[in-house]
Length: 115
Length: 112
Image (cartoon, each protein chain N blue to C red):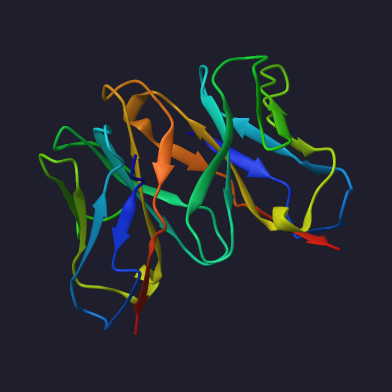
């Protein structure tokens, strides 16, 4: 059974650019969530996808968007990058019915630096 | 809204010492509770969980009991090792939206 994988590992962008981060869910999982972890803080929920539909969103602006594909892999897109977007972005997958909580398994993260 | 409060670190211990990390939460209803661990340069690993009151989660010598009366989920380990040095996060999950709410994390450093 493969775990959650993310790419790239590290990324450097400049303010105003756009970025796409990718995640492959653990085999058999049908939900994927994205979290932002600023340095020295706990992760903050960005959004979750279940069966290719957004299933919940945290307090992040619309320039944070996502996709989930039929094979349950996922993308996080961030437009108009700001310096404060510098963080570790974590993807987590799980098995749920969209309304019932369950264990989420995290990938290693993508470290984004915005200059 | 939901929130999780953890004791601030860093917590510095000697090997074989007893570790306690306090965690309290605020939430309506009956959330599931989790402890995740983050080793340097890595993502989060699930350490243990409890899904209802009085449940005890345990793994790798760590334990935590879901106490609804005190809204707490304190993490304990009887004898720590240097390899337990990491940041520990307490988190809760409410069913609607499947959103994990994390505490700020507690850094633990175990010295030989």
